[in-house]
Image (cartoon, rainbow, N blue to C red):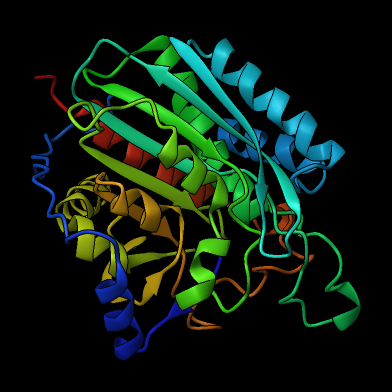
Length: 331
């Protein structure tokens, strides 16, 4: 996960520099019935998936742990009934002028259904703990329990649920690589050093303009202890109707205190590039921590480990997203 800025002038410059015009979503806000949980999102299961990833070690592209985790993710999507699993492998230039071997992994459910929802999380981890208070730790890789594994763990549990009961719409689960190796000054000329796996996927995505998903939901840092999720600025700008849909469902599901209607500054994250590609996409991300005002204190440190993962947070996010999916109606 990368830079967060609150300065309105920076945001205005960012929006003005975006490729293409602002795309307003036409997503319908869900009317929730009294009994809302069609499936029961299992936080214990999601926690296990997070831990399994962390146990591989840091998932820095090109490392042994990265290769082992890729196999695990591919096999998990297959085991949980994806109709097809698409694996993209490429060596992409990073900002250090190195060739970074990335692996994007996508499981598609209900490939024959024209109405689709895209769910996204990055699975790589930052090679350097450059935010660690101990300068001696800053050359070490980040364990990435929250920043990486948490979003993937939630989506693996949703995949497991879909193996038993499919929603009425098609769902594409995308695990993107190479998200977290960018320059720390993430805006302006540096923004494309982030999310390089997503940028590659956009150039090679399995859609035409007429078959794009109706909307996307990105999960990033969704497992922190007592985390809350404000509405992120870029999400509101490009995909306000999607934010309205998800936040209203969170409230109807009993998680209104977890999903705050406060708006926070814009992010360069995977959803930034997905929005520019024409898919309205929001970012569910902890970016208003009371101690820091932005991300969790363990962000980009060696302490981003399982001790800082909260099953209650995984449950709130996972059940909300599952409820959104299972209350969508096919065309």
